[in-house]
Image 1 (cartoon, rainbow, N blue to C red):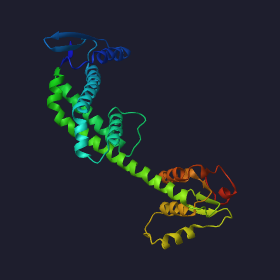
Image 2: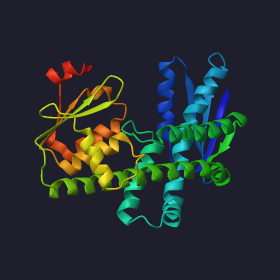
Image 3: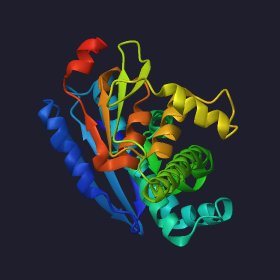
Image 4: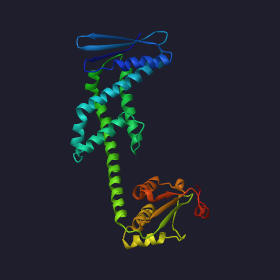
Length: 296
């Protein structure tokens, strides 16, 4: 029996993907037939299934697989014809090399690269699933799909989700860019600053609180606070910001972090590592850890 009929013109070619579907289903002990033909300028693929093997589950698997193929076709269509225009119109402040970087990140999200890691990732992946589900719903309603017509008439609906993803990727890109520039500025301050202290220990207790101790086991956090008051900074500033400010002002020759795993704010540790680089040491157990009852 006929499960699905796909009609498309010569500009599209996904026969190999359809053949892969046969292999996928064969591993699940499901046999399908694929019949290819050409009528005028149209290519036609019919996906057939033996009556004895057919079920709603089989149809659902086929529709999901074809939905992912169509999703990639829709993406490629948007990328080739619309993406650059959308980026240059809405993000005109981006330089050419930044647009290329952003395009690469956007495509990684669209293709669900495993190397991805950014704040809006879950939102974007949910949007990707929404697009695939919309395509799948269309397949479920029709036994025959003209793919070129589908792209032409459904692109408006899918474009909204695609551009929502693009906006989130660029938002994360800009946050990351600002963070890198911030790190670069802090590193510059450290380089021009004369070292005022040999060693600073950052002790992180099990409840995530910090103690700032010098080589002689003196608590020097109050000195960090004095420097903050002298600079007339906002009194509501976060503890981590006070510590980083104090580290930059004092530019220690070494920073020893005790109880790294207790730190709730991982970005705080990451920032210290990036700014002070090889000056940072992570303690794996010492007398100070014992005295402060630090859980390693």
